[in-house]
Length: 217
Ligand code: DX5
Ligand code: ZN
Image (cartoon, rainbow, N blue to C red; front, side):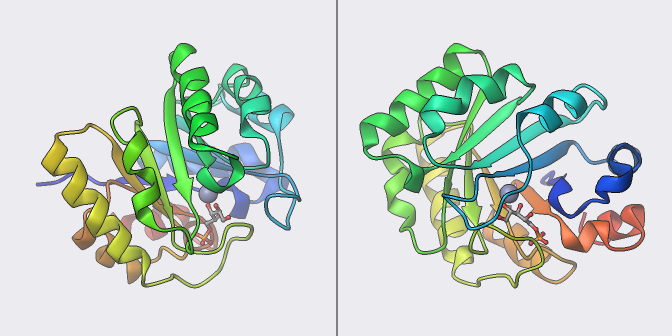
């Protein structure tokens, strides 16, 4: 029986009582905690950054799954790793060349952390192929990055199916993560398509965290 992992996105948590929400996710069995970092340039929203990650990354025992939706990931990668990122996922579209993508992956691996690469809905999934053998995770955005609470983009399923086929065929160890619009209905669609990790924000944090998590496990 395939194991799926849930990664609650704290972007939708109650920031007035963040540690309570985080521990509720941990008690509900979440293995990953998803941090959505937004710089107001790469995406037209600003969320939180290094001080927040530093202050909470060691306050729980889940894997710190940091998703940086920022320009110039090469400049900031090390600082997010030092702040507690266990997985650091940056955007293909934030890099100016394939060379730069490889450089960011190297920075993450040289620091003995896990490297993730994310693609936006309009980016063809084929662009990640050259990096798959070195990546620990590919993050398929199933909403336009920048906000929680958006609707799931169905075309993401084809990208997940494509990645599942390539990764299995090549025998890579790269995990597939999906992010955006995941709820009790879309969760089954992405599982059937071959995903490993489901990021979920608004659906989990609106109401009973444990019950909401159980409904997508
Ligand atoms: C969007 C973020 C997502 C978002 C998910 O830019 O990367 O992680 O918080 O939120 P929901 O699950 O509400 O779509
Ligand atoms: Zn995210």
